[in-house]
Structure formats: structure tokens, C-alpha cells
Length: 339
Image 1 (tube, one colour):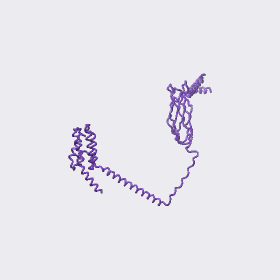
Image 2: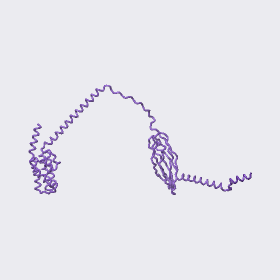
Image 3: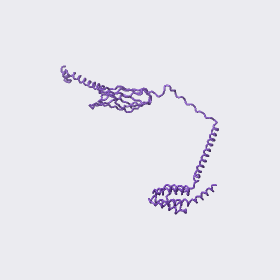
Image 4: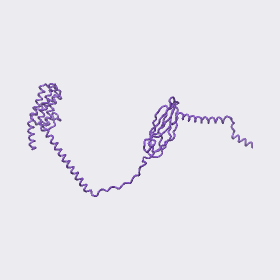
């Protein structure tokens, strides 16, 4: 028996008893708990949630809602808020938070008040609970810490009004009148009458437009040309030395006269093309000499003498007078044919 007891003691040796070992263990546990407690107390003292509210108080589906938090924190802290994880809320959308520093909590203290705004929308009626919000902060010692808010809930009501009634059934289609033929014939008759009236009006207007050029042709082209040449001569451009302007104006008048006299676009043609169109005229040499001298002054910077400039005016009048009789005969033939 004694040998067996000795074997057992040898197998499980007894540790020597130290009278202060239980006290050291208790002291270590208390130290850890104290650190956790004081860290929590310090965090609560350094930063805390003052208030929260949902704006507006009465929320319907699709309304723009704001969750407003008031956070009190030490002035030396820097706070950070991340977007809320809404993966479990399929009918709620939320933007990133906006943090605004409002004011010092009290003059002479190191407390600062922040306002944090979350903008959100809910698209389903019922009670929606947001997950806790993590508020991170950093102190002067560059150590990061964080606290969490409670889970905030808000109620969303349907957009249906209290006094709204149920949807009524669809009424049966209204039967059209059985005798539609008289109405159809009357509509066709009115459409035909209106169409005839519009056609008559357009024809009358077209005739009036055709007669307008005849009225403008009551003055012969040579009369208009002589009037314009006299106007240019009265401007005393030669005496002022404005030879280029003088020859440009005379050439323009003669081209306008040729356009009315021969019914060709003389203003759009070059001198060479214009003379080719007038190759059958008896006054072709006079026309060629007139335009050649005008082009020298207009484009080749030739400065003519005053007698040469006056000669261009005489040439222009001679061109108009030389072709005037032919135009009068043609105009008389046109009037005779119109009768």
C-alpha cells in the first residue's frame, strides 16, 4: 500500500504552495478589466451621440429622407464616417454621409459639436431598421478608435390616401351610332368644298404674282440705266479721285441693264463669258472695250486720267442708247402678241 502511494505521488508531483500566487492572478485579471473599462469610459467621454432624428417625421414611399446625427467630440479628435452597409435592405438607398462642424459646445471648453446627415429613400412601406453606424476617430497620439451607434428605425407609409377608394371596374365600350353614312358623306362634302376654295385661292395668288413682274417692267431698262448713270455722275467721284469706285458703279449699271435687256445673268458671269453670250450683237466691240477698261481699273490697279474716266461714262450711255431701239421693238411685239 505504501509503495502504491509512493508511485502515485511520483506520477503526479505536488507543486509547492506559494501564498501570493492567487493574489497575483487576481491582480492581473483586475488590471485587464480596468483597462477595458477605462478605455470604454474614455471613449464615451471623448465622443458621444447627442441626438438623432429622421426628417421629415412622416415618411411615405419614395420621399427624400435625412437621418441627422448630433455628435459631441473632443476638439483634438478627427472623426470619420463610412457609408452604411445596406446590403440587407433591398428597398432602401442611401448616399454618403455629410459631416458639418457646427460650433464649440461651450466657450472655454475643448468640446465640438458635429452634425452628420445621411440622405436616403425607402421604396417599400413598413418599418426599416438601419444597421449600427461605426464612427471612427483619431486623436493626437495617432491611435485609431471607433464607437457604434444603436440601430435606428423609421416607419414608411404607403402613398395611398386615407380617403382613397378602390379602383372601379372598366365600363363596357360605347356603341357608335348605327347610321354613319350621312355623317361620312357630309364630312367628305365639306372636305371637297374646302379643298376647292383653297385651290382657287392659290391660283388667284399665283396670277397676282405673275402680274407683279409686268408692273415692274413698265419702266424700260434703258430709262433705269440712264437714271443710274446720271446718279453716278452727280456723285463727283472723278473729281474726288475715286476711280475704282467710279468704274465699279458704271460697270454694275451696264451689267444690270444687259440682264434686263437680254434676259441673261450678266451679274453672275465673268467678262469673258458675258461677251461670249453677246457675240451676236452689233455693239460687241464697244462692249468689249468698255468692260476691258473698267476691269483694268477694278482689278489691275490702273489709274486713268479724268478724260479717260469721263469717256467710260460716254461709252456706257452709248451702249444703252445703241440697244434701246431693239428692246422697244421687242417690247411692242410682246404686247401685240399678248393682245
